[in-house]
Length: 159
Image 1 (cartoon, rainbow, N blue to C red):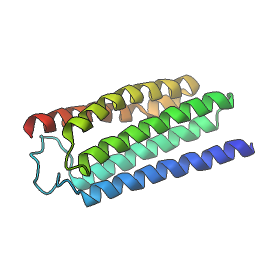
Image 2: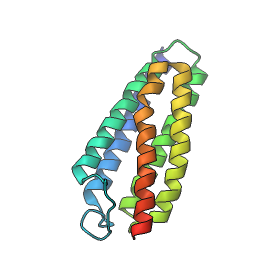
Image 3: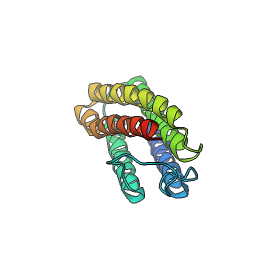
């Protein structure tokens, strides 16, 4: 029980830290994405809209993590699912980092997004195999990964 509690605390701390770092990237916007340095495609969310989307997606990731950690399965399956979730969150942060800080490295963000789609599908499948509700809660993350692919392709084409 003690080992599970430590894993829970670390998981929630990492999800919160990634959320904080993403919000900081969006607020500082050193590449000038929201200040007119790039032509934005139609459907690109505003700064506040993007922060609201990330809040919602990270909240769903946290809830699905709770479902995984409270399930009565082996600790190894839980760790594998959480490691894949952390890889997904890392790729999400990488997409935001490339988009907002590296003077708009659009082709890098596009390449990162392709990996994010694969990781979102794999994470959703791993969570679904452990707990169906946890897998269903990650479906909006997969949809966002597909939509962000549209945004990345549009940014590369327009700029």
